[in-house]
Length: 260
Length: 260
DNA sequence: AAGTGCATGTCGCTA
DNA sequence: TAGCGACGTGCACTT
Ligand SMILES: [Mg+2]
Ligand SMILES: [Mg+2]
Image (cartoon, rainbow over all chains, first blue to last red; front, side, top):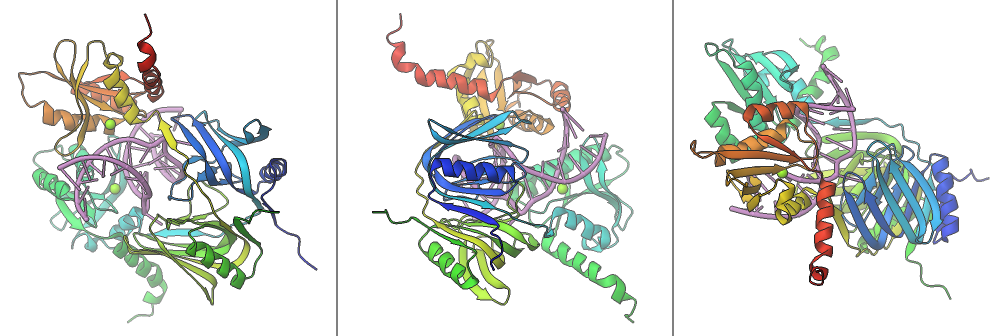
């Protein structure tokens, strides 16, 4: 005895058959995958026109839609989640309109020839964890402040100012206040300017010295130049090594009791 | 007589059958679409772990790879184009390793159960045109400078400075120099700061007045505040209306000869 | 709803 | 290659 099929897969269906499968799939909150020849017209924050060609089209149950060419990481046309689908047969073929209320924008896909329609029931509750983020760099410095520099004591994190948010403020070994801006990628002039913006808010009192420290795995020449001009400092630190430190932390607490 | 099928579509294949189809598809530069239960491990600029669940996986002939959950616009894991694929059967099931030399990063997909494998021959040469971009706003101002303000005469575009690029420099009706920064979305403090950066380079001579003009469809309150502090100006202009102006331009030249 | 900043951002251009 | 800025950026988070 065979278990009931969780997929409906149509190969080179006619437009009417495709329409039925697509409508059913969307109504039942399935993931719908279409391969076929189409044009796409988008109108909203910008507008675009995609001439006839074969693409892969994906409709997800959360109302997101993607049109992928057979190249590139990015979809050529799309709608983020929360969109509404409307399918009909028109003079241009099988027409699917994807409308997003929030931004008042619409994407219209006109399919003239269909290679495949797949209606998939994807069940996905697996956890996703991302490591070596900027957040982890911050946590690593708060957990083991010596990686920034010996004697550093963090005071605040993500402090709201101006507006804007200062990643970390703390005192160094000599009790000098330090403003810390963290970047998980090579820091450039913009990053230095961001640090300056925060320094302008904190470093008000001429009599009290405040250090500006930019933490990043690397820095551009132009960024470095501006940094020196402003008298700030650069501390090299990679997101990967920060992530490693946190991994140790998570592994440590219990076993630490049994260590000599 | 039937035309030869341009797709290979397997429904609930075993791992061995799936592997063959996938390997063949990649070797023949096809677009390969897989639906199935998998885990994904990524390690590179960051790292991540995706626990077991059903996803849609896409491999494109240009070496880009996408892992999509049944929700969200963004892929949960991916590799941009230029990656290399390697497929094998291992103890974790059907394992596909996607390696990117440039960034020395890898994504490993381990498939344990497969709902579908589709090997698609997508031919796509259709032109894609995007309208209402910042570029079009710039072109519209250069074509019809009066939309910025009556009497404006653009002198340069995308002038390299500092480094950085000044969108437009020109003279106003009173022969005052004006630095123009264009934004296609609501301008914020960052945009004003960008304009200031350019002004700092151009407005060196105290005796000569230079105007700073921020062109955008809207501006944030904080942006407006900083703008006023610095004595710059805001000119409301939407990318859509700029796009309309260029459409007229493209339609005009020939017929203009025949008009009275 | 507005504002701000991160992202495995990606992508394209220029020096 | 490095640097910089646009993107229909998307997205989370805070006020
Ligand atoms: Mg930061
Ligand atoms: Mg601009």
